[in-house]
Length: 236
Image (cartoon, rainbow, N blue to C red; front, side, top):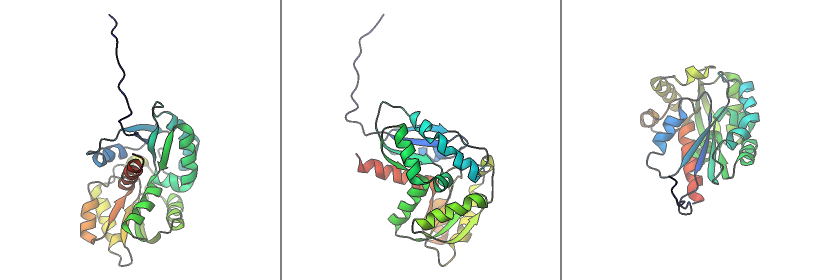
């Protein structure tokens, strides 16, 4: 038996958002569910091939797969914003290149990434002097610090867990992150603390760190979610 049907209209719906997640990332989707818990926005997720280790070469290699990852998002809609979920790769590849590649893979008005989002969030807070906490090895940390400084943010103090393997980064305890961030944030020259990496769990400790040091504390996933919401609302 065949039935007739009618199609519902998308005219009254807000344009959806898209998110490109690293194949190895075990954290960003969980934290984004928390960030968008009270939102009516649609969020579609695609994955991009990424290495088991966080090295400059592995991060750079992702450039060749960004367009294809964006193309795997549903193509029936125009996106208000697509976020590329890797802070360190954004520093190495560059925000403009990432934006161009994503726009060539799907129909989207705005593109952001954690590095760009963190920069915009720092402007929103009115801070320029940061403590930066990273899980990465030094060959990844160096371009990350440089990218922030090129954006007008001063890295007053820096700390790292020095971990190369993604599966370990995803399992660094929030207790460890809390202790490290508090130690960095207590520096008198620091106005705020940024915790880098979308695979590092932070949503359970941001408020506690901020309370302990009495300064703003933000992270890759928190900044990216904030910026995507902002860009989406501006295009509503």
